[in-house]
View 1 (cartoon, helix red, strand yellow):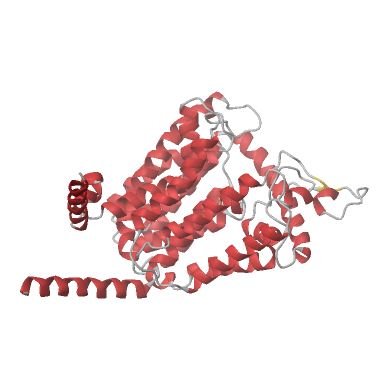
View 2 (cartoon, one colour; view 1 turned 45 degrees about the vertical axis):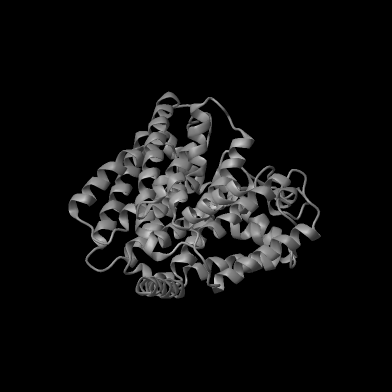
Length: 455
């Protein structure tokens, strides 16, 4: 019996070396580009994580499930790592900054008392940071296939989300606060619009734009954009405009008309969507110019404690939160005050800073803030030169721009999985040494095969 087991183990090992077992268990991974396509599809779900949860929970009549949420949050980085895994890794400068940020988080955790209820946020932070590691081994040669698969999955999420959002807008046309609850979630319109933003960036970063393709894209994105504009989504459009501007600058001369045309389509769709709900749009426009009065009778030094903030005005809330964070920066020290400690200091309860860089500096200290900024900056460095001549890499860069801009209004470090994943992608595709090494290994393997045949 033991001999039989040894023989079977030997056969399995031999088949595994030839790739037969892997292809039998995962047949779709045997075709060319399948790993990259699977990576792109998984990345699409991770980037549209919130929108995917809204659809998943909403369609099943649930308001949330911690087990399902946690499994997805940790499972997606694991899948991304498996689909992008390669032997060997060249350490780059951004990797040192990432390790520095990890050290800052760890020191802050060890030195500062853990805030009540922040254990969950620490787990979410671990899952978010795992996105960098999971996507770090992506290479520029994979970007085109990754983008193609990303487009398909994201398009499905956007279209389904647009249908449900439109239905809720009609049923809640004049209901306060103006933003519709979609499948029971009040921020669903923003989540779906974020997904649409990444989809638009994937569609505009083609190397060879054609008028027919531009027209088709414009038609396809027009109605969803109108719907999300009517859902009173605001800052996401500003972030998308900034990202499209970068895409236009990086596009080769003579091809920028493609980006401009799609950008104009989005602008026109926003005008139509906002005009359709004119009264609600004017109310939100008033919030943008509304001035927050100062309450001088309050003795607290925190800025938010001395402000009469309109709790229905998210812009005023974010401004007050930013003032609080800036006030705390000088006293943050080297390791900060601990994750989610900002919630204890601010007089605007149950709200984080909403600006990831400020939160990282306050809660993880000057070390955390500096390494976080350097990590983002280093991810962009050297990527620009490739992005000018490679549309798929340009998609990664512009998506990272979009994610960084979103983190200035919707950021929360423990939930910035999209940002860290895209930083990992950016660092990976900019690694020229990795390409040279892969080419050399490929040549060496062919040489060894030839020597074996000759022998």
